[in-house]
Image 1 (cartoon, rainbow, N blue to C red):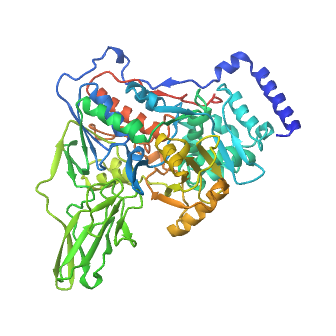
Image 2 (tube, rainbow, N blue to C red):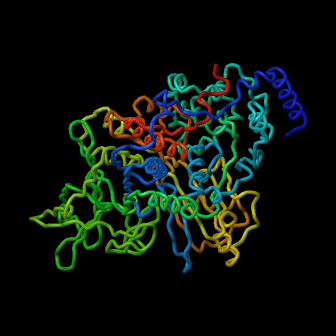
Image 3 (tube, one colour):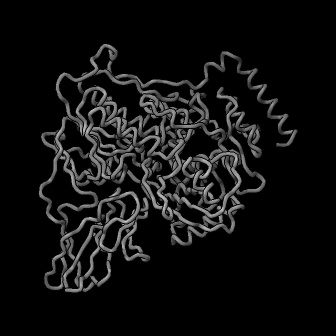
Length: 633
């Protein structure tokens, strides 16, 4: 920063402090808050039900695990159903064979921010906080050489000096950028759960940012907003304002965060799963929820099926279209593969991965199948050979009649139906939409609200093992700005002990690249995406230029929630019109400021509270950041 600009910044900061005064400063400070209870005498209510009460939770991510835990410790009979072989959702992991060595991998790097009060509280209650270590900085690498690398380490959490500190650390932003009376920058500091959505939910964030000083947009707003996994021109301004309020302007804890010491399964998911079982919970994995059963206005059961199975849907295809190699066929959202055997008969498989239901593609290298989402691979017979699943692709009946072949689901011995008093759907958006679409629910409001939910553009996670060591970087994680694909990089060979050991023994390094939201025009051939991202990595870490990849895991997924303009009004919340059915997940309508893993955990605890309220029991306190922005009057 130039000396004259620095002097100007210091002078304005001093003036701001003097003008506001101590009393004024105290009044506008963001504070940790607690959501109100449904009952004014909550503290006097009993803790546990007097009669056995059953709850079924669908979805084993943070939302489902949090809801399950809160209800188990209150004495409820809880069954948790997860279609994957492990719990964890986007935080889950699995083992891979790296040239003869077993190593743990996961869906991508996760930061556990200080203001994740519900998630961090849950981890502390389970005795898992020792499995984390703090990250000392939050740097952003800009492709623009004039900006270089900006550091956003906090020096204070006192508003507005926390914001002034960020501006002071940014080489290309000045306090003079705040001097824009006709602009919209200050709206980021005026979050209000009612007014903000009334005024700005229909406005896309790109349009809003045109009324904000460009240096602020380029240096601070845009790099951080990308971590919402939504494109600027498809992102609700109200959701964007809530995002910045939660992560910086409305919380008293700044931008500090922790990372897991080991992989997420070792540090978080496995011990959490063990605790749920110790408390008496039934954890059913490798089984998928098919549909809810409603009788007399209440949900009475949940029908289960094998992961990837298709129940009750027949599909006919011309026999001439089926050759001796696997051929893909779609029937609505259902994907099938069929081939003609040497004896003239036909064989068919469901094209849904048995890990989390993604559509699998043909693997040209092996003649089998590969899942683009989490790296699962299957041989030509549909038997898993790599990745997180251990369940084969589901076989279908293929019967020929005249010139047509009918593909049908093989009859199962019986439909398994779980019965309970309450049900919590805590799956991701695609999973929720599938279950509701197959259920005959009387609430058109709920059905329409779920149908209108969407997912954001795809995101990429690419972990690469290199044959070349690099000097340790200042921190193991960097956000980036200005690159076509790469939005962040994580250096696993200086992050987790197992990867540090691998790098030391092989004189190598392990890097993970992330693309948070890939625009439709950039969803091109995988080989070309890899080539471009590798060029971007060589630019970001020149020491790796020319290094050979000895192993890699490349995945493209599409399951983060869409926060599009106008979505808010129809978005479902935790409470549904069906009195014994609740939802949990980071995609729900929340007047409370929370995002990502904290939103998932918070809504899981909120759903558990709704069950407690329905039973006349004491609610658990739900902590949150300040409910309104520091400049809200």
